Image 1: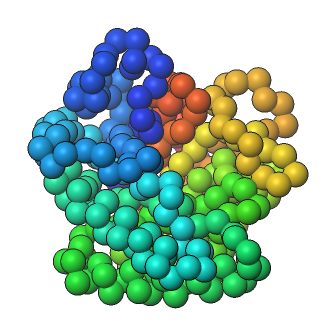
Image 2: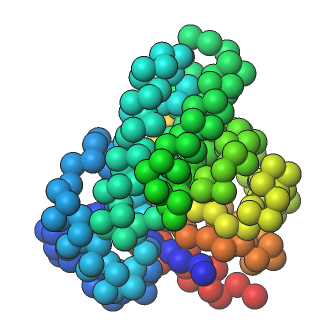
Amino acid sequence: MVKFGPSGQCDWFNEEHSHTEDMPAWLVEHGLDVYEYAFNKGINISDEKAAKLGGLFKEANIELTVHGPYYINFANPDDEMADKSKMYVINSLKKMKLMGATKLVVHPGSLMKGSREEAMALVLRRLEELSKLLDENNLNDMYVCFETMGKHGQVGTVEEVAKMCAIDKRYMPTLDFGHINAFTLGGLKTKEDFRGVFETLKKYMGDRYKNVHIHFSKVVYGPKGELHHVNYNEDVDGYGPDFEPLAAVLKEEGINFTLVTESRGAQTKDAMLLKKIFTEMN
């Protein structure tokens, strides 16, 4: 099933409401069907509030996804710190169970003192270990969605994420196309550029490449990749990517996706716009 929605509370919502509990009905009013909740700075939600919020989203038939803590880093050469990252994932998933959410977006990690190859080897080893923890904690119905990253100092190219997700069927890609475009310094322009992303997933994941979580916004970048996110219709000549060629590939490939917009302050309006473009495309 194809779904569109915002990440977090946009300026428009905040002008009209003050509580996240109002979000499900508000999204229904505006024709959207997914919302990404943030654990970015920590899992700071009580069990009671998590259950209440989850019930409201379920009643409104809005899928709830969650972005994991920013301080997760599976590329950290310190095994003790990497073990903490594994537990941040496990604890996030446990809290998400109360919320009725099944997709946790995770930044794989940042390069530290070693080479990119050394960092990637650490990540793959830690994700093998994380698989065992998922089994031990009975989290078989949850997805850890590793995100493609936009800065050259981060682990998370399309190929790297595909290799991560090949480890376990509970690992799913979060394709952040603004990040991919920024990392490649404007490499996403044509339909074939976007199709290449899915061809890379297919190479490592087989038919599972057709089930993805997507982040979409335009991103301003410099020589080392991502600088900042902007709104879809903001005047940012030369930056992107555009959504139309991606929308065409999503339809042609029959991709099953949830798409979350991460624009700067206008997430909901951009989600509505992208859904309109996708829905009206032949």
